[in-house]
Length: 251
Image (cartoon, rainbow, N blue to C red; front, side, top):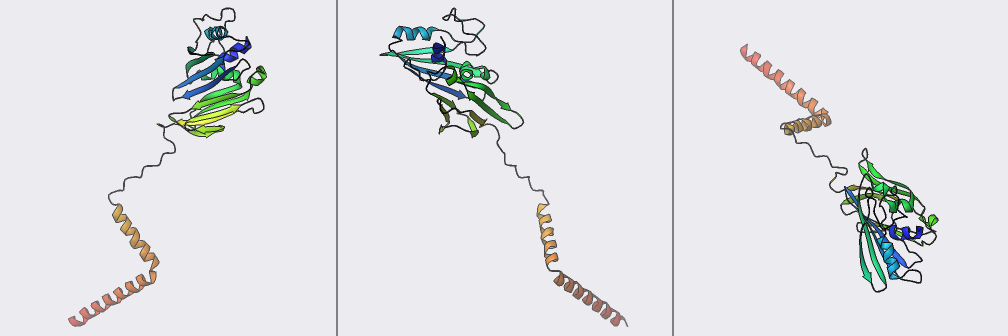
C-alpha cells in the first residue's frame, strides 16, 4: 500500500515502470502543484491495475488520513486532488493538481513525504518569501525510489538567493537520489514590490542658485586671501587720499 501512495503522490522512478515529475508554480498568493505520472504496464501491473490506482483518492494534506478501508471515496471534510488522465498504448499519463495558499502549503502531503522539515513563509521585517526544505527522507522510507526531480517556477517573482542544481528561465530544479541528498533553500520577492528603491532627488529651492553663487564667492575668497587683503588695503588708501584732497580744497 505504501508503494501505491508514493506512485500517486511523489515525482519518482519506481520499479513498477512509472515515471513522474513534480512541479510547483508559485505566485504571490498561490502554490499550484502539478504531479504528472507516466505509468506503463509490466509483469506486476496491467492497465486495469494502473487505472485502479488512479481512482483511489488521496487527501492533499499530510494531516488528513488516507482511507485505506475505502480508498475510492472521499471524506467530505478533506481536500483532494483534481485528477485527469490520458490513455497511452501500453499505459496512462496521469495528472494530479491542487492549488494551495501561503498559509497551508507547508501541510502539502507530497512535500512532507520527501522532506522531514518543511518551512515556507514570508519574513515581513526583511521583505522576502522563502522555501526551506531539509533532510530528505523519501529514500529512507522506500528503497524502490531511484531519483526525484523537483521543479519550482517563479513567473512573477525575482529570486534573491537559491541553491538549485539547474536554472532554466524562471524554473529552478533540484535533482535528488540516494547518494545525493540535497536541501532546498530559496528566497524571492515579487516584481511589483520595491527592491532597494533609488531615492528621488529633492526639488531644488527657489534660492538655490543664489546660495550656489555665494558659496562660490566664499570659496574664491578663502583660496585668494592675499589678493583680498591687498585689494582691501588699496581701497582704504584711495579713500584716505580722497578725504585728504577734499579737506585740502576747503582750506
